Image (tube, rainbow, N blue to C red; front, side):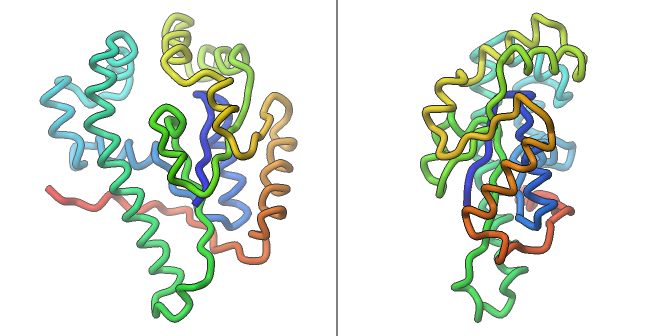
Length: 214
């Protein structure tokens, strides 16, 4: 399983979508986090106790204005996301090889997550793909595309790993300072180099809800 990361608004989700279209399985940590924070999600009770709200916009305002609150939210979410991610990979492996007779065949998975470098979880993966995009472009996207204030955009950018830190951790860099077609070509070239084109899997569009343990 390879990690896929990048700074906020770098285009990592777009790269993940290109992997999916090529038939590669993608496990999206952000989607898992969304589901965990829904009213029936496993993280919801703890978030409500700590913050009094599970609204993502309100939580963003809180955690990027208070480092202690950010640490508390990560302490709630990260273990649950990691557990659920492992569970989903196991489900996908079983779906691919239900009889167990083909378990020796490779199951190629991309794990898309924002904080792989910050948490150092990338060290447990086969490799790390970093989608690289200049901070000024990402800041503009946050303000014009996502409607964030310039102040909030700056807070988020400053709270994440620096571009140089992500580059230092990367096994492979995708340059997303140009066009979407250029990014798509980089994804396809990576798939070819890895030999995944011949062993790609059926695209996994529907992500099952997190397992309920409450």
